[in-house]
Length: 254
Length: 250
Image (tube, rainbow over all chains, first blue to last red):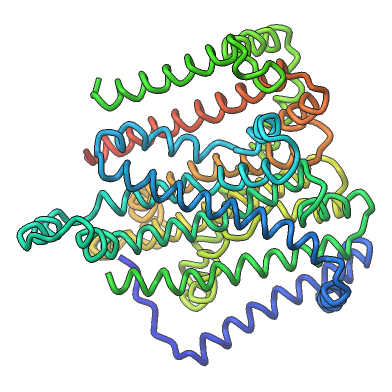
């Protein structure tokens, strides 16, 4: 049971959030003042630098590379995860057999598997896609499996009583009943696939944001590192926030 | 043994056997993957010769440092945030978004700030683990049944006594989940950082072996890390089950 929070108006909440954001910026600025320009660029400096590098267009090829690999990896992870999850959720015994294995694989440091992926796929987009998908597919499978498992049997019985056709059963009963859980899986899988894609670019790649980050370490370009980090964090947070809104709406309706 | 467990063992053994035959017959080339039996024998030789000791100690020490810091900071942060609803309300959405941020992107920044030593990877391990601990501490404190707190008040227990003898035991299962996740995450953070860029440790050695086409060492090391993490996770899982059994769950 959640302890009841005193209900606050939107204004008060916005105020608290503004205070928090202000604190973060203040700490950042302080670190910049203490450490100097070499250690950390200031919030304003980072923003200006980011705006300038976006405007100059140098970033685009790398962005496109990362986004392309990420998109393919995510589509793969999502389709394989939903399919595998549906099968494992429907067939109880296979689900029971697979679940502990999936959970175990989920909690190992998958970075260590990256050299194997590289040996199988070679340096390039193949390895990036495979590694990104590897990160995302397991949570999507697990969430989908739970969603399918937890469909109330009475729904299916009721549908059968009404002599529903298999296609309509899927469309009007099974899909709406599992959608909230599946979507949560897709949301978690989104961020993990992003991590996987970026990691693989950081370790072995000649392009993309991860590659740019590693190159910037070598050249000691703090401004590039800070602005890329800033962009990635913002992208991840905004994507997650958007998906969280949909997620909440789906779960409330269910 | 349950049927599912038997089947699981059979499937896993079958998978290893399949990989073994594929490698032995040359369907998977040797420079791509070596047979699992050779991975094991190579690992045994490395362990026997004591070649892993330095890197193993280094990685484990870093994991321990990150883990300890994450558990302490995560627990204290959780307790403090729980006590102040206003802070809680502001922090909650951020905590739920925390794991959507790829923490590894901060690693280059920490390397520039602290140099190429063990500090950046400990920080990454810590950052990965601390949120799991905070979230689960909050969860645990949320789920302390109000009736327990009322009972404590009936007995006129002080704040400290209530905390140690009522709240802490009641929240323990959730705290345990937090610790379990923190272990997994600090391993991921530390080994991952070593692998990307570092001056030593197990992750570094894997990368080193990869760049030298030394598949025997590389696969042995990967096997070692996976085995180590699996053993740690499984013992924590067993311990958790024991705790739950004592509380009368299942």
